Image 1 (cartoon, rainbow, N blue to C red):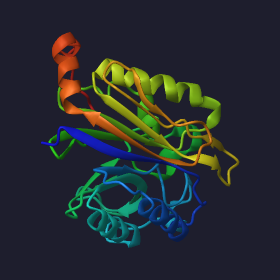
Image 2 (cartoon, helix red, strand yellow):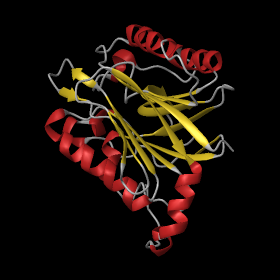
Image 3 (tube, rainbow, N blue to C red):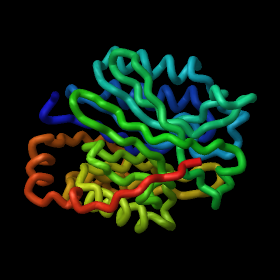
Length: 267
């Protein structure tokens, strides 16, 4: 187990529906990181922006972006995660569907995925993307990480910590008009789940004229800020989190022991 985990948060603008240029953008940013980090976090739909036209830009699980992530993770000896548009057919399905899929790529090339559970109905995401039904808990260097995507942040039941994770991680394209909710809910998720909570959001304006201010942030298990990136700032923020401190906080307060027990019907 690694007692301290060093994480690089990349808050940046995205190039609309252009995977090749976005890969180049993130390659340059990742190569500019001068210190060793354990995990690099990219925003939601980091190759395209939040488009409702997946037929233009969807990739497969052996496509260029997956190959790119594998190569960079190995070269830099770090895990890389973020979501992108994937065209795939699950075992229970008869035809291909589009997914807003988070990929967690380890340095060894091992791939774990999470499909966004709560598709954003206000933008019609539910009409073009298939919702996921399973949470993912990544076991990485002795840390348990629960990665979720954007709109999932509004649904605390789905993210409830049953003592099965240490870090709650959200990647997002969360627009400026509702950024107060983003900041408030990130902090709330940290407090109620007694875990580190990180939110990585994009900046800039997309081709649908949606404006994004970023406000990426990280909170400890008591909801105290570890890092808050300034609005609209194009920045790579590196944070260090402590397993010892997390366990000390949980042992002192033990709030999770009093949580309600319930089951979720994710179908």
